[in-house]
Amino acid sequence: MAFYVTTPIYYVNGEPHLGHAYSTIAADILARHHRQRGEDVFFLTGTDEFGEPVAQQAEREGVTPRELGDRLAPRFKEMAAKVNASNDFFIRTTDEGHQRRVQEVVQRVYDNGHVYEGMYEGWYCPRCADFKTEAEIEDGNRCPIHKIELTREKEKNWFFRLSAFQEELEKLYAERPSFVEPGFRRNEALAFVRQGLQDVSLSRRRLKWGVPVPWDTDQVIYVWFDALLNYYTALSYARDGEDLTPLFWPAFHILAKDILKFHAVYWPAFLMAAGIEVPKGMFIHGFLLMEGHKMSKSLGNVLDPDQVIEMFGADALRYYCFREVSFGRDGQISPQGFEARYETELANEYGNLANRSLSMIGRYRDGVVPSADPEAELASAFEGVVERVRGLLDESELTHALDEIWKLVRRLNQYVEETAPWKLAKDETDSERLDSVLYGLAEGLRVTTLLLHAYMPDTTGRLLDALAEPDRGLPEFGSRGGGQILAELDPLFPKLQKAQ
Ligand code: ME8
Image 1 (cartoon, rainbow, N blue to C red):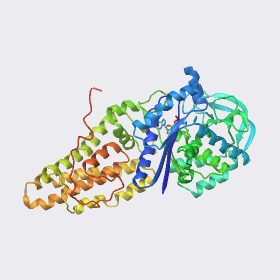
Image 2 (image 1 turned 60 degrees about the horizontal axis):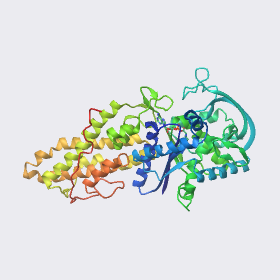
Image 3 (image 1 turned 180 degrees about the vertical axis):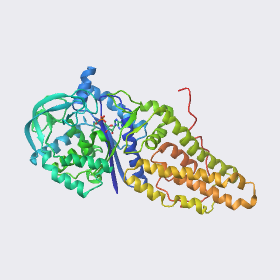
Image 4 (image 1 turned 180 degrees about the horizontal axis):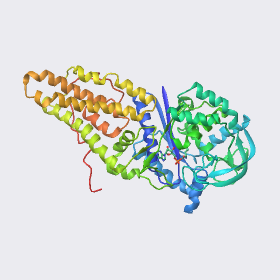
Protein backbone atom coordinates (compact mmCIF):
# COMPACT_ATOMS: atom_id res chain seq x y z
CA MET A 1 0.00 0.00 0.00
CA ALA A 2 1.14 3.50 -0.78
CA PHE A 3 -0.07 6.72 0.78
CA TYR A 4 0.74 10.17 -0.57
CA VAL A 5 -0.30 13.19 1.48
CA THR A 6 0.20 16.89 0.80
CA THR A 7 -0.22 20.28 2.46
CA PRO A 8 -1.02 23.45 0.53
CA ILE A 9 2.16 25.12 -0.65
CA TYR A 10 2.40 28.40 1.22
CA TYR A 11 2.92 31.78 -0.37
CA VAL A 12 6.28 33.28 0.39
CA ASN A 13 4.73 36.68 1.05
CA GLY A 14 5.19 36.65 4.82
CA GLU A 15 6.57 34.69 7.72
CA PRO A 16 4.99 31.31 8.47
CA HIS A 17 2.40 31.39 11.25
CA LEU A 18 0.47 28.88 13.25
CA GLY A 19 -2.22 28.57 10.57
CA HIS A 20 0.38 27.13 8.19
CA ALA A 21 1.85 24.96 10.91
CA TYR A 22 -1.64 23.58 11.53
CA SER A 23 -2.08 22.15 8.02
CA THR A 24 1.46 20.82 8.06
CA ILE A 25 0.93 19.07 11.38
CA ALA A 26 -2.37 17.57 10.22
CA ALA A 27 -0.76 16.07 7.14
CA ASP A 28 2.16 14.89 9.24
CA ILE A 29 -0.10 13.03 11.66
CA LEU A 30 -1.65 11.17 8.74
CA ALA A 31 1.76 10.47 7.20
CA ARG A 32 3.11 9.10 10.47
CA HIS A 33 -0.01 7.05 11.10
CA HIS A 34 0.22 5.42 7.67
CA ARG A 35 3.89 4.68 8.24
CA GLN A 36 2.82 2.98 11.46
CA ARG A 37 0.58 0.79 9.34
CA GLY A 38 3.64 -0.26 7.40
CA GLU A 39 2.65 1.55 4.22
CA ASP A 40 4.91 3.30 1.74
CA VAL A 41 4.39 6.96 2.52
CA PHE A 42 5.31 10.14 0.72
CA PHE A 43 4.59 13.43 2.43
CA LEU A 44 4.96 16.69 0.54
CA THR A 45 4.93 20.31 1.64
CA GLY A 46 6.54 23.43 0.23
CA THR A 47 6.22 26.99 -1.00
CA ASP A 48 4.25 28.77 -3.70
CA GLU A 49 6.58 31.40 -5.10
CA PHE A 50 5.11 32.78 -8.31
CA GLY A 51 2.21 35.08 -9.07
CA GLU A 52 0.80 38.35 -7.82
CA PRO A 53 0.75 37.62 -4.10
CA VAL A 54 4.51 37.21 -4.08
CA ALA A 55 5.35 39.78 -6.77
CA GLN A 56 3.35 42.46 -4.93
CA GLN A 57 4.91 41.76 -1.57
CA ALA A 58 8.37 41.88 -3.15
CA GLU A 59 7.55 45.25 -4.65
CA ARG A 60 6.42 46.55 -1.26
CA GLU A 61 9.70 45.41 0.25
CA GLY A 62 11.79 46.71 -2.63
CA VAL A 63 13.31 43.31 -3.46
CA THR A 64 12.87 40.94 -6.36
CA PRO A 65 10.31 38.12 -6.02
CA ARG A 66 13.18 35.67 -6.31
CA GLU A 67 14.97 37.31 -3.37
CA LEU A 68 11.80 37.25 -1.32
CA GLY A 69 11.35 33.53 -2.02
CA ASP A 70 14.97 32.79 -1.25
CA ARG A 71 14.57 34.51 2.10
CA LEU A 72 11.20 33.06 3.08
CA ALA A 73 11.19 29.53 1.64
CA PRO A 74 13.87 28.47 4.18
CA ARG A 75 11.65 29.90 6.94
CA PHE A 76 8.80 27.60 5.88
CA LYS A 77 11.21 24.71 5.64
CA GLU A 78 12.43 25.43 9.17
CA MET A 79 8.85 25.73 10.38
CA ALA A 80 8.11 22.23 9.08
CA ALA A 81 11.20 20.87 10.85
CA LYS A 82 10.36 22.66 14.08
CA VAL A 83 6.85 21.24 14.29
CA ASN A 84 8.45 17.86 13.70
CA ALA A 85 6.98 17.32 10.26
CA SER A 86 8.39 14.24 8.59
CA ASN A 87 7.99 15.50 5.04
CA ASP A 88 9.83 13.51 2.40
CA PHE A 89 10.40 16.52 0.19
CA PHE A 90 10.02 20.28 0.25
CA ILE A 91 8.93 21.70 -3.07
CA ARG A 92 9.55 25.25 -4.21
CA THR A 93 7.62 26.18 -7.33
CA THR A 94 10.71 27.99 -8.56
CA ASP A 95 12.44 24.59 -8.78
CA GLU A 96 13.64 23.86 -12.29
CA GLY A 97 12.05 20.37 -12.18
CA HIS A 98 8.67 21.78 -11.22
CA GLN A 99 8.62 24.39 -13.97
CA ARG A 100 9.59 21.93 -16.65
CA ARG A 101 6.86 19.51 -15.65
CA VAL A 102 4.24 22.27 -15.35
CA GLN A 103 4.95 23.29 -18.92
CA GLU A 104 4.62 19.69 -20.07
CA VAL A 105 1.23 19.23 -18.44
CA VAL A 106 -0.14 22.61 -19.53
CA GLN A 107 1.00 21.87 -23.08
CA ARG A 108 -0.91 18.59 -22.90
CA VAL A 109 -4.08 20.39 -21.80
CA TYR A 110 -3.60 22.77 -24.75
CA ASP A 111 -2.97 19.91 -27.18
CA ASN A 112 -6.10 18.18 -25.91
CA GLY A 113 -8.11 21.20 -27.02
CA HIS A 114 -9.12 22.61 -23.64
CA VAL A 115 -7.48 26.04 -24.00
CA TYR A 116 -8.51 29.11 -26.05
CA GLU A 117 -7.67 32.81 -26.19
CA GLY A 118 -10.15 35.28 -24.71
CA MET A 119 -10.73 38.50 -22.77
CA TYR A 120 -11.30 38.59 -19.07
CA GLU A 121 -12.75 41.34 -16.94
CA GLY A 122 -13.69 41.21 -13.28
CA TRP A 123 -13.03 42.10 -9.65
CA TYR A 124 -9.66 40.80 -8.67
CA CYS A 125 -7.99 40.20 -5.29
CA PRO A 126 -4.20 40.25 -5.63
CA ARG A 127 -3.72 38.43 -2.30
CA CYS A 128 -5.99 35.58 -3.38
CA ALA A 129 -4.67 35.85 -6.94
CA ASP A 130 -8.27 35.28 -7.91
CA PHE A 131 -11.25 37.02 -9.46
CA LYS A 132 -14.31 37.27 -7.20
CA THR A 133 -17.91 36.79 -8.25
CA GLU A 134 -20.39 39.56 -7.44
CA ALA A 135 -21.89 37.32 -4.74
CA GLU A 136 -18.57 36.92 -2.96
CA ILE A 137 -17.70 40.61 -2.76
CA GLU A 138 -18.14 42.35 0.61
CA ASP A 139 -18.74 46.02 1.54
CA GLY A 140 -18.87 47.35 -1.99
CA ASN A 141 -15.67 45.92 -3.39
CA ARG A 142 -13.72 44.17 -0.66
CA CYS A 143 -12.25 40.70 -0.58
CA PRO A 144 -14.27 38.50 1.81
CA ILE A 145 -11.05 36.85 3.02
CA HIS A 146 -8.47 39.62 3.08
CA LYS A 147 -10.80 42.61 3.55
CA ILE A 148 -8.71 44.63 1.07
CA GLU A 149 -10.11 46.56 -1.88
CA LEU A 150 -10.54 44.60 -5.08
CA THR A 151 -9.36 46.01 -8.39
CA ARG A 152 -11.17 45.96 -11.72
CA GLU A 153 -9.02 43.98 -14.14
CA LYS A 154 -9.28 43.37 -17.85
CA GLU A 155 -6.87 41.48 -20.06
CA LYS A 156 -6.50 39.18 -23.02
CA ASN A 157 -5.22 35.82 -21.98
CA TRP A 158 -5.50 32.07 -22.35
CA PHE A 159 -8.54 30.38 -20.91
CA PHE A 160 -9.05 26.91 -19.56
CA ARG A 161 -12.38 25.45 -20.65
CA LEU A 162 -13.57 24.64 -17.13
CA SER A 163 -17.21 24.79 -18.24
CA ALA A 164 -16.70 21.69 -20.37
CA PHE A 165 -16.05 19.61 -17.24
CA GLN A 166 -19.27 20.34 -15.44
CA GLU A 167 -20.83 16.97 -16.16
CA GLU A 168 -17.69 14.97 -15.46
CA LEU A 169 -17.25 16.76 -12.16
CA GLU A 170 -20.83 16.05 -11.14
CA LYS A 171 -20.24 12.43 -12.04
CA LEU A 172 -17.05 12.34 -9.99
CA TYR A 173 -18.93 13.69 -6.98
CA ALA A 174 -21.77 11.23 -7.45
CA GLU A 175 -19.47 8.24 -7.83
CA ARG A 176 -17.03 9.14 -5.09
CA PRO A 177 -18.92 10.68 -2.20
CA SER A 178 -15.76 10.85 -0.11
CA PHE A 179 -13.79 12.77 -2.74
CA VAL A 180 -14.16 15.88 -0.60
CA GLU A 181 -14.50 15.57 3.16
CA PRO A 182 -16.13 16.64 5.42
CA GLY A 183 -19.55 16.23 3.81
CA PHE A 184 -20.63 19.85 4.27
CA ARG A 185 -17.61 21.01 2.28
CA ARG A 186 -18.40 18.48 -0.41
CA ASN A 187 -21.88 20.00 -0.66
CA GLU A 188 -20.38 23.47 -1.01
CA ALA A 189 -18.13 22.32 -3.81
CA LEU A 190 -20.94 20.50 -5.53
CA ALA A 191 -23.22 23.53 -5.23
CA PHE A 192 -20.50 25.61 -6.86
CA VAL A 193 -20.29 23.15 -9.74
CA ARG A 194 -24.06 22.95 -10.13
CA GLN A 195 -24.57 26.70 -10.31
CA GLY A 196 -22.74 26.52 -13.64
CA LEU A 197 -19.03 26.72 -14.29
CA GLN A 198 -17.35 29.58 -16.09
CA ASP A 199 -14.09 29.19 -17.93
CA VAL A 200 -11.07 30.49 -16.05
CA SER A 201 -7.90 32.30 -17.01
CA LEU A 202 -4.96 30.01 -17.42
CA SER A 203 -2.40 32.73 -17.99
CA ARG A 204 -1.46 36.32 -17.20
CA ARG A 205 -0.17 38.82 -19.69
CA ARG A 206 0.82 41.74 -17.46
CA LEU A 207 2.70 39.66 -14.97
CA LYS A 208 6.26 38.52 -15.62
CA TRP A 209 6.81 36.47 -12.48
CA GLY A 210 5.68 32.97 -13.38
CA VAL A 211 6.23 29.90 -15.51
CA PRO A 212 6.13 30.89 -19.20
CA VAL A 213 3.22 29.56 -21.25
CA PRO A 214 5.02 27.10 -23.54
CA TRP A 215 3.29 28.15 -26.78
CA ASP A 216 3.16 31.90 -25.95
CA THR A 217 6.17 32.90 -23.90
CA ASP A 218 4.93 36.51 -23.57
CA GLN A 219 2.59 35.21 -20.90
CA VAL A 220 3.03 33.31 -17.69
CA ILE A 221 0.86 30.52 -16.38
CA TYR A 222 -1.69 31.72 -13.83
CA VAL A 223 -0.22 31.00 -10.42
CA TRP A 224 -3.04 28.73 -9.29
CA PHE A 225 -2.48 26.22 -12.07
CA ASP A 226 1.27 26.22 -11.56
CA ALA A 227 0.70 25.88 -7.81
CA LEU A 228 -1.84 23.04 -7.91
CA LEU A 229 0.45 21.12 -10.22
CA ASN A 230 3.10 20.99 -7.47
CA TYR A 231 1.36 17.92 -6.07
CA TYR A 232 1.98 16.13 -9.32
CA THR A 233 5.33 17.55 -10.43
CA ALA A 234 7.17 16.88 -7.15
CA LEU A 235 6.97 13.13 -7.59
CA SER A 236 8.81 13.37 -10.89
CA TYR A 237 11.96 15.00 -9.54
CA ALA A 238 12.01 14.64 -5.73
CA ARG A 239 14.37 11.68 -6.05
CA ASP A 240 17.32 11.87 -8.40
CA GLY A 241 16.93 9.61 -11.38
CA GLU A 242 13.67 8.15 -10.12
CA ASP A 243 10.08 9.00 -10.98
CA LEU A 244 7.87 8.31 -7.98
CA THR A 245 4.64 9.11 -9.82
CA PRO A 246 3.64 5.50 -10.59
CA LEU A 247 4.20 4.53 -6.97
CA PHE A 248 2.43 7.40 -5.23
CA TRP A 249 -0.02 9.16 -7.53
CA PRO A 250 -2.90 9.97 -6.83
CA ALA A 251 -2.47 12.18 -3.78
CA PHE A 252 -4.57 12.94 -0.75
CA HIS A 253 -4.73 16.66 0.00
CA ILE A 254 -5.04 18.57 3.26
CA LEU A 255 -6.08 22.22 2.98
CA ALA A 256 -8.31 24.86 4.53
CA LYS A 257 -11.65 26.08 3.28
CA ASP A 258 -10.21 29.28 1.73
CA ILE A 259 -8.87 27.29 -1.20
CA LEU A 260 -11.64 24.73 -1.53
CA LYS A 261 -12.81 25.83 -4.97
CA PHE A 262 -9.36 25.52 -6.49
CA HIS A 263 -8.78 22.05 -5.12
CA ALA A 264 -12.24 20.56 -5.38
CA VAL A 265 -13.26 22.03 -8.74
CA TYR A 266 -10.44 23.50 -10.83
CA TRP A 267 -7.88 20.86 -9.92
CA PRO A 268 -9.76 17.66 -10.81
CA ALA A 269 -11.05 19.31 -13.99
CA PHE A 270 -7.54 20.31 -14.98
CA LEU A 271 -6.22 16.84 -14.35
CA MET A 272 -9.04 15.36 -16.42
CA ALA A 273 -8.13 17.77 -19.20
CA ALA A 274 -4.52 16.58 -19.03
CA GLY A 275 -5.55 12.92 -18.90
CA ILE A 276 -4.16 12.43 -15.40
CA GLU A 277 -5.92 10.53 -12.64
CA VAL A 278 -7.75 12.83 -10.20
CA PRO A 279 -6.71 12.96 -6.51
CA LYS A 280 -7.59 10.18 -4.14
CA GLY A 281 -9.45 12.71 -2.03
CA MET A 282 -9.06 15.76 0.14
CA PHE A 283 -9.92 16.93 3.60
CA ILE A 284 -10.88 20.56 4.07
CA HIS A 285 -10.21 21.94 7.52
CA GLY A 286 -11.40 25.15 9.13
CA PHE A 287 -9.56 28.23 10.32
CA LEU A 288 -7.70 28.75 13.53
CA LEU A 289 -9.17 31.89 14.99
CA MET A 290 -7.67 34.41 17.36
CA GLU A 291 -10.26 36.43 19.23
CA GLY A 292 -12.88 35.57 16.66
CA HIS A 293 -10.88 36.36 13.53
CA LYS A 294 -9.02 34.12 11.11
CA MET A 295 -5.38 34.12 12.01
CA SER A 296 -3.79 35.59 8.89
CA LYS A 297 -0.84 37.52 7.56
CA SER A 298 -3.03 40.30 6.26
CA LEU A 299 -4.93 40.75 9.52
CA GLY A 300 -1.68 40.54 11.49
CA ASN A 301 -3.21 38.56 14.37
CA VAL A 302 -0.87 35.62 14.11
CA LEU A 303 0.77 33.39 16.67
CA ASP A 304 4.39 32.66 15.91
CA PRO A 305 4.95 28.88 15.98
CA ASP A 306 8.55 29.43 17.17
CA GLN A 307 7.37 31.16 20.31
CA VAL A 308 4.71 28.58 21.04
CA ILE A 309 7.20 25.76 20.54
CA GLU A 310 9.76 27.42 22.74
CA MET A 311 7.22 27.65 25.51
CA PHE A 312 5.31 24.39 25.23
CA GLY A 313 7.34 22.19 22.88
CA ALA A 314 6.37 20.94 19.43
CA ASP A 315 4.46 17.93 20.72
CA ALA A 316 2.25 20.01 22.98
CA LEU A 317 1.51 22.30 20.05
CA ARG A 318 0.62 19.33 17.86
CA TYR A 319 -1.63 17.93 20.54
CA TYR A 320 -3.33 21.19 21.42
CA CYS A 321 -4.28 22.13 17.88
CA PHE A 322 -6.22 18.94 17.29
CA ARG A 323 -7.66 18.58 20.76
CA GLU A 324 -8.86 22.16 21.11
CA VAL A 325 -10.29 22.68 17.63
CA SER A 326 -12.48 20.00 16.12
CA PHE A 327 -10.66 19.19 12.88
CA GLY A 328 -12.82 20.37 10.00
CA ARG A 329 -14.40 23.24 11.96
CA ASP A 330 -13.17 26.73 12.75
CA GLY A 331 -11.97 27.11 16.29
CA GLN A 332 -10.52 29.57 18.74
CA ILE A 333 -7.05 29.10 20.04
CA SER A 334 -5.31 31.16 22.69
CA PRO A 335 -2.16 31.11 24.81
CA GLN A 336 -4.39 30.59 27.88
CA GLY A 337 -6.01 27.58 26.22
CA PHE A 338 -2.59 26.12 25.49
CA GLU A 339 -1.52 26.51 29.04
CA ALA A 340 -4.67 24.95 30.44
CA ARG A 341 -4.51 21.85 28.24
CA TYR A 342 -0.80 21.53 28.79
CA GLU A 343 -1.18 21.42 32.52
CA THR A 344 -4.40 19.50 32.97
CA GLU A 345 -4.18 17.00 30.15
CA LEU A 346 -0.59 16.58 29.07
CA ALA A 347 1.24 17.05 32.35
CA ASN A 348 -1.37 15.86 34.86
CA GLU A 349 -3.26 13.19 32.98
CA TYR A 350 -0.80 11.65 30.55
CA GLY A 351 2.56 12.66 32.01
CA ASN A 352 1.59 11.63 35.53
CA LEU A 353 0.09 8.38 34.35
CA ALA A 354 3.39 7.52 32.70
CA ASN A 355 5.58 8.46 35.64
CA ARG A 356 3.29 6.88 38.17
CA SER A 357 3.02 3.60 36.29
CA LEU A 358 6.74 3.35 35.73
CA SER A 359 7.58 4.22 39.29
CA MET A 360 5.12 1.67 40.72
CA ILE A 361 6.61 -1.05 38.55
CA GLY A 362 9.99 0.19 39.74
CA ARG A 363 9.05 0.12 43.37
CA TYR A 364 6.97 -3.06 43.54
CA ARG A 365 8.56 -5.21 40.83
CA ASP A 366 12.13 -3.91 40.57
CA GLY A 367 11.35 -2.23 37.27
CA VAL A 368 10.40 -5.42 35.44
CA VAL A 369 6.99 -5.64 33.78
CA PRO A 370 5.28 -8.66 35.39
CA SER A 371 4.27 -11.55 33.14
CA ALA A 372 0.56 -11.79 33.82
CA ASP A 373 -2.84 -11.58 32.20
CA PRO A 374 -4.55 -8.21 32.26
CA GLU A 375 -7.79 -7.87 34.16
CA ALA A 376 -10.86 -8.23 31.96
CA GLU A 377 -12.29 -4.85 32.89
CA LEU A 378 -9.18 -3.09 31.66
CA ALA A 379 -8.77 -5.28 28.57
CA SER A 380 -12.35 -4.51 27.56
CA ALA A 381 -11.60 -0.77 27.49
CA PHE A 382 -9.03 -1.47 24.77
CA GLU A 383 -11.23 -3.76 22.72
CA GLY A 384 -11.51 -2.61 19.11
CA VAL A 385 -9.85 0.72 19.83
CA VAL A 386 -7.05 0.38 17.30
CA GLU A 387 -9.57 -0.39 14.56
CA ARG A 388 -11.68 2.58 15.61
CA VAL A 389 -8.71 4.92 15.50
CA ARG A 390 -7.68 3.55 12.11
CA GLY A 391 -11.21 3.97 10.81
CA LEU A 392 -11.41 7.56 12.04
CA LEU A 393 -8.03 8.42 10.57
CA ASP A 394 -9.12 6.91 7.26
CA GLU A 395 -11.66 9.72 7.30
CA SER A 396 -9.04 12.24 8.50
CA GLU A 397 -11.00 12.65 11.73
CA LEU A 398 -7.94 13.77 13.64
CA THR A 399 -9.86 15.17 16.58
CA HIS A 400 -12.26 12.27 16.98
CA ALA A 401 -9.40 9.78 16.79
CA LEU A 402 -7.51 11.74 19.42
CA ASP A 403 -10.62 11.80 21.62
CA GLU A 404 -10.80 8.00 21.38
CA ILE A 405 -7.18 7.72 22.44
CA TRP A 406 -7.59 10.20 25.24
CA LYS A 407 -10.41 8.11 26.68
CA LEU A 408 -7.77 5.42 27.20
CA VAL A 409 -5.53 7.82 29.09
CA ARG A 410 -8.46 8.64 31.36
CA ARG A 411 -9.47 5.03 31.73
CA LEU A 412 -5.95 4.11 32.78
CA ASN A 413 -5.84 6.87 35.37
CA GLN A 414 -9.18 5.74 36.71
CA TYR A 415 -7.85 2.18 36.80
CA VAL A 416 -4.93 3.27 38.96
CA GLU A 417 -7.36 4.89 41.39
CA GLU A 418 -9.72 1.89 41.42
CA THR A 419 -7.06 -0.74 41.93
CA ALA A 420 -4.80 1.32 44.22
CA PRO A 421 -1.65 -0.74 43.63
CA TRP A 422 -0.01 0.88 46.69
CA LYS A 423 -2.61 -0.95 48.83
CA LEU A 424 -2.21 -4.24 46.96
CA ALA A 425 1.54 -3.99 47.53
CA LYS A 426 1.02 -4.10 51.28
CA ASP A 427 -0.51 -7.55 51.32
CA GLU A 428 1.40 -10.58 50.02
CA THR A 429 -1.91 -12.39 49.20
CA ASP A 430 -2.64 -9.64 46.64
CA SER A 431 0.60 -10.27 44.83
CA GLU A 432 -0.93 -12.02 41.84
CA ARG A 433 -3.53 -9.31 41.41
CA LEU A 434 -0.80 -6.67 41.65
CA ASP A 435 1.04 -8.45 38.83
CA SER A 436 -2.10 -8.26 36.69
CA VAL A 437 -2.70 -4.63 37.50
CA LEU A 438 0.89 -3.57 36.82
CA TYR A 439 1.04 -5.61 33.64
CA GLY A 440 -2.24 -4.01 32.52
CA LEU A 441 -0.90 -0.53 33.22
CA ALA A 442 2.31 -1.12 31.30
CA GLU A 443 0.44 -2.70 28.40
CA GLY A 444 -2.27 -0.05 28.38
CA LEU A 445 0.32 2.69 28.47
CA ARG A 446 2.24 1.06 25.62
CA VAL A 447 -0.84 0.76 23.41
CA THR A 448 -2.06 4.28 24.20
CA THR A 449 1.39 5.71 23.58
CA LEU A 450 1.79 3.95 20.24
CA LEU A 451 -1.58 5.36 19.21
CA LEU A 452 -0.45 8.83 20.30
CA HIS A 453 2.84 8.43 18.50
CA ALA A 454 1.64 10.02 15.25
CA TYR A 455 0.40 13.03 17.21
CA MET A 456 3.35 13.51 19.57
CA PRO A 457 6.33 11.69 18.08
CA ASP A 458 9.02 12.97 20.47
CA THR A 459 7.50 12.53 23.89
CA THR A 460 5.87 9.23 22.99
CA GLY A 461 9.19 8.05 21.60
CA ARG A 462 10.84 8.78 24.92
CA LEU A 463 8.12 6.98 26.82
CA LEU A 464 8.26 3.97 24.50
CA ASP A 465 12.00 3.79 25.06
CA ALA A 466 11.41 3.83 28.81
CA LEU A 467 8.84 1.07 28.34
CA ALA A 468 11.50 -0.95 26.48
CA GLU A 469 9.31 -0.97 23.37
CA PRO A 470 11.47 -0.76 20.24
CA ASP A 471 8.57 -1.21 17.82
CA ARG A 472 6.68 1.83 16.51
CA GLY A 473 3.95 0.06 14.55
CA LEU A 474 0.25 -0.03 15.41
CA PRO A 475 -0.24 -2.04 18.60
CA GLU A 476 -2.66 -4.64 19.85
CA PHE A 477 -3.54 -4.78 23.52
CA GLY A 478 -2.12 -7.90 25.16
CA SER A 479 0.18 -8.80 22.27
CA ARG A 480 3.31 -8.13 24.34
CA GLY A 481 4.02 -10.33 27.32
CA GLY A 482 5.90 -9.11 30.39
CA GLY A 483 9.56 -9.35 31.33
CA GLN A 484 10.81 -6.04 29.93
CA ILE A 485 13.16 -4.02 32.08
CA LEU A 486 11.93 -0.45 32.30
CA ALA A 487 14.18 2.58 32.14
CA GLU A 488 14.11 5.91 33.95
CA LEU A 489 11.90 8.61 32.51
CA ASP A 490 12.24 12.37 32.96
CA PRO A 491 8.89 14.16 33.17
CA LEU A 492 7.30 14.15 29.71
CA PHE A 493 5.76 17.59 30.16
CA PRO A 494 7.77 19.62 32.65
CA LYS A 495 6.22 22.50 34.58
CA LEU A 496 5.91 25.69 32.53
CA GLN A 497 8.07 28.69 33.28
CA LYS A 498 5.29 30.98 34.48
CA ALA A 499 7.29 34.18 34.05
CA GLN A 500 6.97 33.96 30.24
O1 ME8 B 1 -3.41 29.87 -0.40
N1 ME8 B 1 -6.20 28.48 10.04
O2 ME8 B 1 -1.21 29.95 0.33
P1 ME8 B 1 -1.33 30.61 1.77
C1 ME8 B 1 -5.98 27.32 9.42
N2 ME8 B 1 -0.35 29.35 -2.05
N3 ME8 B 1 -5.20 27.17 8.34
C2 ME8 B 1 -4.60 28.26 7.85
C3 ME8 B 1 -4.77 29.54 8.46
C4 ME8 B 1 -5.62 29.62 9.61
N4 ME8 B 1 -5.83 30.74 10.26
N5 ME8 B 1 -4.04 30.42 7.76
C5 ME8 B 1 -3.43 29.73 6.77
C6 ME8 B 1 -2.22 29.71 -0.57
N6 ME8 B 1 -3.76 28.44 6.81
C7 ME8 B 1 -1.72 29.09 -1.85
C8 ME8 B 1 -2.01 27.60 -1.81
S1 ME8 B 1 -1.90 25.13 -2.83
C9 ME8 B 1 -1.72 24.49 -4.37
C10 ME8 B 1 -1.61 26.84 -3.03
C11 ME8 B 1 -3.26 27.38 5.93
O3 ME8 B 1 0.05 30.93 2.16
C12 ME8 B 1 -4.40 26.63 5.27
O4 ME8 B 1 -3.95 25.35 4.87
O5 ME8 B 1 -2.34 31.68 1.77
C13 ME8 B 1 -4.67 27.47 4.06
O6 ME8 B 1 -5.42 26.76 3.09
C14 ME8 B 1 -3.26 27.80 3.64
O7 ME8 B 1 -2.54 27.96 4.87
C15 ME8 B 1 -3.16 29.03 2.78
O8 ME8 B 1 -1.82 29.40 2.68
